[in-house]
Structure formats: C-alpha cells, structure tokens
Amino acid sequence: MTGSSETHNTTDVVHGIRLRCSECAISMHVVATPPPTVCPYCKRKLDRTATAIPLAEPFPAPDATEVEARIGKLYSRPNVVVALLIGAVALLLLSWAVFLQIRNADNYYYQPLVSIYSLLAGTFVVSRFLFAAFYSPPPDVGYTPSVTVLVPCMNEEAVIRQTIERIFSAGYPQDRLEVVCVNDGSSDDTLREMLKAQTRHPRLVVVDFEKNRGLCHAWGVAMMLARGEFVVCVDSDTFIFPGSLNKLVQGFVDPTVGGISGHCDVENANANLLTRMQDVRYYFSYKIMKASESIFGTVSCLPGCFSAYRRICVLAVLEDWMNATVMGVHGNYADDRSLTNRILKNYNIIYDDTALATTIAPESWKQYTRQQARWMRSYLREIIRTGRFIWRKHPVPAISWYAMMWLPLVEPFVMLQALLIGPLMAQTFRPDYTLGVLSITLVWSLHFLATTGRRWWWGGIVFTLSYIAFYSWQIYWALFTLRGRKWGTRG
Image (cartoon, rainbow, N blue to C red):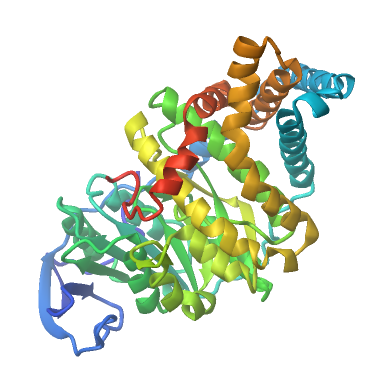
C-alpha cells in the first residue's frame, strides 16, 4: 500500500485558517486554498482564526497493482461456452413468451390491462438492450480542466478518510484539482477525520455545518465555494479508481454536454444476499439503462455517488434547486435527479462507462427500504416536471419518458391480477406474462454474468421477486410521503 500522493515538509503541525459565521453556524477550514471572505448564506464577513493541527499519519491508498487486481475481479469473463448456453436459454424463454402473446391475442380483449402492460413493458426493456448496443463512451482526448470534487458527508467516520485518499490518489493533476468536503452536522468523528486528511492534502477544503442542514445544502454550499470549471460529486462512501476523474471529464469537450455520469459497482457486494442483488441491479441500471439514454444525451439521473457537472450550468439553476418546494411547502427536497433534470432542459446529459468507482450499498433490508422510498419520492417529484420539456429533446427518449410516467403506477395491480387474482379467483393463468417476466429477468441477469463473470447473477431474480412482492407497491407509499426529507440510508 502507498501513502499520500502529496509531499510535505518534515513538521508535526499543519497551519491553516478557520472561517466561521456564528449567525449561520457554519465553518470553513482551509490550508493552501484561497480562504472565502463572506458567508455563502448571509454574506456577512467571516471571523478568522488561525489553526494548528497535528500532521496525521499517512493513510494507505491502493497502488496500481491492487487496483488492476480489483478491476480484474469486477470484470472477469466466464467460460464462453457457458455464456452462450445461458444466453440461448434466456432468448428461448423470451421468444416463447412472445409466441404466447401472439397466439393468445384474444387476451387483449378479455384482459386488456395485463396484455397491454406486458407488451409495453416488454418492448421498453428490449429496446433498452438494443439502444445500449450502440453506446460508446466519450473518446479520451487528454482534456484536463480545473475540477472541484464535492463530498457531502454525515456520520461516515469509518469511510470518509478512505474516500478522500482515493480522490487525491486518482491521478488527476494536483494543480487542477480541489476537493470540498462538507460535514453535515455529524454526531460522530467525521469532522476530525476530514481535518486529519486535510493535514496530508492542503488543497482540501473542509466545511462544517454545526447543525444538520441536509444533503441539498451540503451540495449547494460546496458548489458556491468551488473554484473548478467542473464539479464532480462523490458520495462519502464511494471509492473512485485511478484515472476515473480524467476519464469522467472527457465528454465535456462537447459544449452541449452539461453533465456526465460515471459507472458505479457495489463495493460490498460480497456482504450478503441483499448487496449481491443490488450489485446486479446497479450494473443493469448503468450498463443498459444509462447507456441507452446516453446515445440520445438524455440520461435522466446523474447519481450522487459519482457524477460530474459543468459548474456554470449548476450555478444557473442553483437557487431554484435549493429552494425547491413540494406541494407548496418549502423544504430540503432537492436531490441528484432534480438537479439533473434542471440541467437536462437545456443541455445534454451523458454516461461514461470507463470512469469507474465503487460505492457501499445498504446491507440491511430496513436501510435498503428507506433508500428506495427516498428514490421513489424523487422519481415521482421529477417525472411530471421533466415531462413538460422532454418532448423537445428527441422523440425516442420522449416516448420512453411518457411511458414511464404511467407504467409504474399500474404495475402493482397488473402483477396482482396476473399472478394472484387471475389464477386463484378466476382460474385464468397467464403463462405469457409469467414467462415474460422470467425471461427478461434472466436476460439481464445473465448479461451481468456474461460481461462481469460475477457468479451472483441470480441476484437479478431475487430483485424481481422482492419487487413483485413489496417494492413495486412502495410507489403508493411514496405518493403519500412526498414531503419526506431524510437522507434515506441514514435515517
């Protein structure tokens, strides 16, 4: 393991400046970056205090050999014969489901909801695979603009130091890199770990909210303090790979691009069944869903775990984003999806699958359920707003978007009718629907196996079963809790 990527004089103390606004209960700690003079909220002059923090011990960051080994584990190919065989089985089941749909065309009259939904949903998923086949990442042209990496954080003392070290050891030119970490009122030693990292990396800016303000404000203040032309958002439990920052910004050579999503896998996939399931789902959501959206420049969500923005685009919508309301009530509602869609209105949003990172996924079902509720609320808040302008972008993503406005709302009742009410009460079994769900699940699950070699491809089946049984119904709970403000996985 190697230590810090920066060098320092032999000293026991690092001198810096603490700038504080007592009115807003916010502090900023700087060492080698220009200190702000006024509070980003109230614009009052900041109180300045000199600081002297003991130089922390070097924190191990993975070297090139360890990283290559990690990538090799994430993307090892299975036996070609096995991959072809399982792919053939999945396609056979899909073809069988289509045949049953055609043979039982009279179901469109007797059971129109299930039949029409099955056709639309199946067409949507298959089209994602077809479009994704035409995806290619932005070419690497050696573009190295000034970049600020934003890391919002709350109660992450166990991982925040590693996250920071991974950023500074990612290989981006140090004179063009700035990192802003925001401690959002943590009750543990997160702030202390940030300040330790600052003694090793003087270009790190630490912002401390003395009281919790929420993820929106953590992002917003960091955006206002950032000095880079582009900003990269990294979750406090996300670990980027060397070279990923360089790759992530290449697409910005195109001035019509306002944001770029990197690719995230699940760091703790080996923890249990739930994390393996999420690993399969993450892969599908990036490699198929985001890839298919990217060819039209309409990626619908730049995930907060690892994405980049053209900073001027964010500043243009920042006030509106930070002061968003839901059902007429102001609150901490802004998130990654809402910020993405505000920029998508006037710019293209794309995906780069060569910019790699891993993130820690929830390991308990309770934690996962809270996260999914927050994501679902975000989806519902934004789907109608974006529907007002998406038709101007391109007809293909527009049609997909409008379909996704309605399909999730009727989906739980379709599944209930096809899998429970029909067979038990009306003695009408729909093998075409059941086979369709199974075959599509197998197609994307086995695609995961064929392209990564990770043996827990069956996590896709676990996801489908859990979605049918519980999480599809969560959309109605989200409708009743649209005003929810919590971070999701942090309570």
